[in-house]
Image 1 (cartoon, helix red, strand yellow):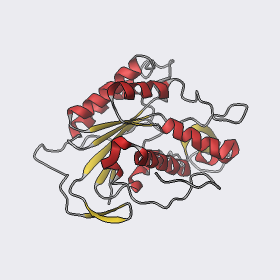
Image 2 (tube, one colour; image 1 turned 90 degrees about the horizontal axis):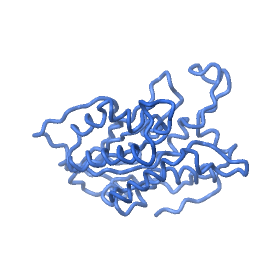
Image 3 (cartoon, one colour; image 1 turned 135 degrees about the vertical axis):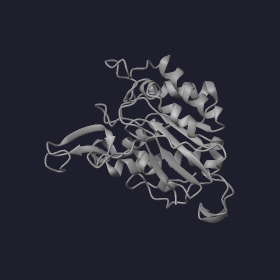
Image 4 (cartoon, one colour; image 1 turned 135 degrees about the horizontal axis):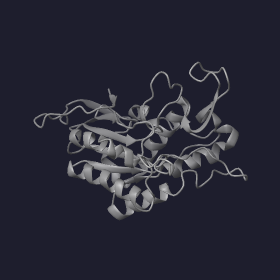
Length: 279
């Protein structure tokens, strides 16, 4: 079974290998013998991070990504609430990941929501310089370990313009800045900002509210006064974003090996009344 972990470092001995396996994994509906197994690390912020009981029903998409993989992939979710590229690096969190990375692993990198907080110098990273430099550090760390870095543009905030369309500036200039780093460094990119904007566009303002943390007073004991939060996801929203990530992997020619590890899933639509065309 795909395992999911979070938080600190679990240093692997250099003599230990986790990649050889004789298990049969049923990828894409077929029985295929997998000779390799690997870890997929997530470095990111609260939109991906695991949530404790006191935060529920708020959920990060990283919690549901393991459901899309067979037993060859262990998802190790190191995303942490409130972090930017700058604070994640400053706290030594990338260094902990790098110690655990092994050849053949993947490092998914998704930041942007907190990098734009100009009022907080511990987290702010300007999109033209510091943010891009920081992303390069993440990618270089993965490559030093023989792992594959993958950049994921920050998921969109649920924000609509007066004409009813999603705000293309919902996370400011950070999605474009990440796309630039991907192009400059030849790093695989999953455009989750664009995919989540498409999701919000298809569902509309009213139809997308259940994806985020909109709770009336008294609806949940963790939020007795209610909550209106268009950044963080409900359980349903986190599941949907995890599916967007899986779909983006399927569509990425640069992630062919990882794509073979995705489970076959029914072609049910993310969007009510609309069919999903499988790549």
